[in-house]
Structure formats: structure tokens, C-alpha cells
Image (cartoon, rainbow, N blue to C red; front, side, top):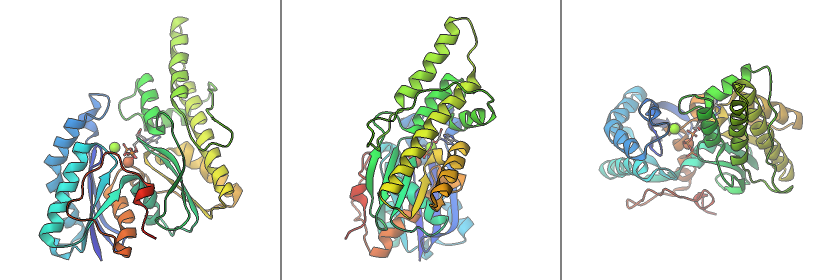
Length: 338
Ligand code: ATP
Ligand code: MG
Ligand code: FE
């Protein structure tokens, strides 16, 4: 079957055409980064307007590249939430219009389920599996006891990892989004300023990154107060090491506690070189198979939405045409039916 998927939850307008849930025929991603850069972050009103401007052209390009016509489409999937309400609405309205006009089922899809199931485009998932979700707005450890059943074991209590990266990057004078710059600087660093690790309660799988971010800012201020220039690369390395140490340790601990058979890394920060390397070696040590999406499939894209929507397609769990965009949407509630 052929699915057309639409993703507009934040600042990427993306449309994909995917066959049988896994074979990506096209995955067009139009990023608005250049537009938002000058504001130092995503401006919601501008994001919505940009989605409206580009959705039709991106849709046409996705069909052209996949070499399919609208009448070949068997179902439409769309990111229903979570995300920016105005941005989500553009995708949801487009998807509903297409589903109505083509008379095909509509599948409202959870954005984070999409990030997790991007891994299904890389290889087979074996259950129980554990997903470490590290993105711009989310940091979660998710247990998948069975296919399509999501249970959140822990989440961030303040900043998401990507958010912390972007804030630290700004302090290090990098443009938005600064995650990749901090990653590169940390990789090249020879010195490290060791920063604290927020482990929280011994048995907790929750995270906290706002203290770490503040630690970076105070180091910078301390240097400036002394009339010295702060060592940005040593700070980048200290920050990156603290983040990686905490997220990978907690993920491995949860994997052992719940006896999972596979680890899944996902979300925009899964593009981080240091994180990929560290988690790979820890999983290897633990004899745990690991899947990580390619960099393009780590950040927002519509192919991952198709991969998650496939769970619902195969079970005939469709959405009605009064599907609403949901800025806040529970991942656990989006699980497939029993
Ligand atoms: P969410 O998925 O939680 O709604 P989002 O969709 O905005 O948030 P993603 O697109 O998944 O987030 O990820 C974007 C984030 O990933 C940004 O914060 C960006 O800085 C970060 N990021 C991308 N590449 C890297 C990297 N190499 N190292 C660290 N962070 C990175
Ligand atoms: Mg984005
Ligand atoms: Fe995302």
C-alpha cells in the first residue's frame, strides 16, 4: 500500500511517500532554519505562515520524486501533535482535505512515535525494546513491551537535551540551532572543564538539564569577571560529556532492569556524534543490539511519521475527519489498541 505522510509540527515542512510502511519512495524536507535564525529560535507565527506557503510545492515534489499520482495513494498520515498549534494545523488541514478528496483513510500520528519508529526504517525492531528519545522538545526513556505500546519510564523535569544544547550554543556565540556546532567543538576539544551531572534520585529515570546549562553560563561569567576569555571548547566538551554520561547511563540501566532485547536511539540530538559513539560502545559491552536512524531521519521528517502511522494502518485504526491538531498529546495514549 502507498501512504502519503505530512509533518509540520515545528519548523520543517515535510512530505513523504512510503510503500508498505518501510520503503521510502520520497521524503522531502524543507527547513525554515534560515528564516528563524535571525530571531535566535523558532517564531511560531512565522513558522505557520511558512508552512502554508510551502506545503503545496513540497507535496508536489514528494509525489514527483516518488513517481506516484494522487490516485495511487491508499492512505494519508499526518502529525497530529505535539508541536506548535499553528504549525500543526497547516499539516492537519492539508491531510484532511486530501483524505476527503481521495476518499482514503486518515491517520493522526504522534510526533514522538514518529521519532521512535524512524528506527523501523533502519531495521527490524525486536520487543521488548527501549527508546532513548533526545530531541528539541523531549528527553524521554520509553519502554516498548510490544509493538506500538509506549510506556514512559522517565522524562526531563526542565529543559530537553536539544533545548539545553541550543541555549548553551547561544552562550558560546553559535547561530540557532546550535546543537551541531557544540557537538563539533566538543569533538575537537583537547581540554575539558568537568561539569556536574544531574543524576536525581537513585532509582529515577527522569532528567534535568537546566542546572548544567546554568553551570556553563556561570563558568563563562567567572572567566569574564577575571578578565579572561572563557575556554569555549573545553566548556563544550564538559557540557557534552555530562549530557552523554547521564542519558546513556540511564538508558543502559533501564534496558537491564526491563530486560529489553534492543535499544533505539532517536530525535534530533541522536545526530550527535559523541552520543552515537558512546551509546554504541555501551550497547556492545552489554550485548544489546542498537538501532540509530541516519542523520536525516533523526531530525524532523515525514518518512518517520509514515513509519509510525503504519502501526495503525495495519490494525485498521483510523482517525475521523474531525481530527484535531493537538499541541499537547500523550504518547502513551497514542499506543495501539489491545
Ligand atoms: P520535538 O521532536 O521534541 O518536538 P524538535 O522536533 O524541534 O523537537 P528535533 O528536530 O527532533 O526537535 O531536533 C532538533 C534539535 O536537535 C535541536 O535542538 C538541535 O540543536 C539538536 N541537534 C541536531 N543535531 C545535533 C547534534 N549533532 N548534537 C546535538 N544536538 C543536535
Ligand atoms: Mg526543527
Ligand atoms: Fe521532532
